[in-house]
Image (cartoon, rainbow, N blue to C red; front, side):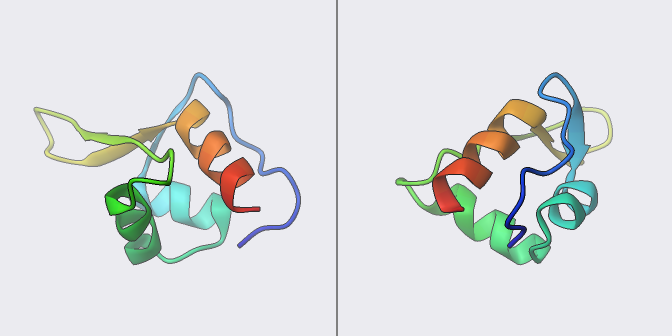
Length: 67
């Protein structure tokens, strides 16, 4: 887990690979955080590409809650 505030645009959208790289965690960790009711990480799936994406705000909230 990254100890300093990650360079994430709060209004941006990030796929799993980008989010895990920015937070320096494995993509499986992101999936585990989503399932944890105490964690604020919220993701959604794009209809066209079926790609999992996260809003920048959600990533920053998750980083703040975990860090």
